[in-house]
Amino acid sequence: MLISEETRKKLAELKDKYPTRQASIMPALHLVFDEFGYLGVEQLDEAADIIGVSRLDMNETASFYTLFPKQKVGKYLIQVCTNLSCALMGADNLVEYLEEKLGIKLGETTPDGIFTLWNVECLGSCGTAPMMQVNDEYYEDLTREKVDELIENWRKGEGS
Ligand code: FES
Image 1 (cartoon, rainbow, N blue to C red):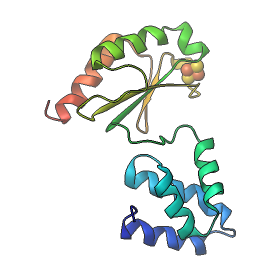
Image 2 (tube, helix red, strand yellow):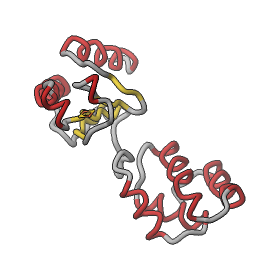
Image 3 (cartoon, protein in one colour):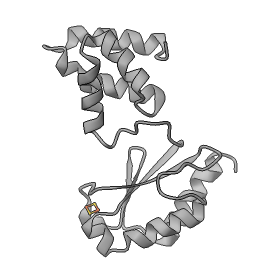
Image 4 (spheres, helix red, strand yellow):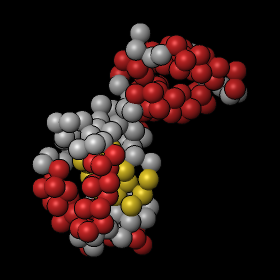
């Protein structure tokens, strides 16, 4: 069993909260994500068994929502939008800069497990391009200076 007793209890409670079992899939995904920071197949299977939906339904729903990581990621998941508006405002340069600064390529995690760098589709904040989402927060109108400051603050928070 990977899922903690506490999360298992919360998952079990979802059964009575929603009119159908299917309706409890999304809140279940959030509970699993909150515990692990990603949605692995084993965790999804366990959660499906607890809330009483098919493992297939659970996994299909999880894979539809691409913003839920499916593998372990760094403490700070940096998702740079590289869609049209952001691309026009220099998103590719921003990605290159982050790759250089963090010493990793897109899709990779720093060896200390602190940062993961992804590119993603439009995050709906085109007016403030270029932008990125880090965990649950948006960072907009990005410049190299802003990125330097953010990375420095996150590194300080990690004591490195
Ligand atoms: S294109 Fe980047 S937020 Fe829309």
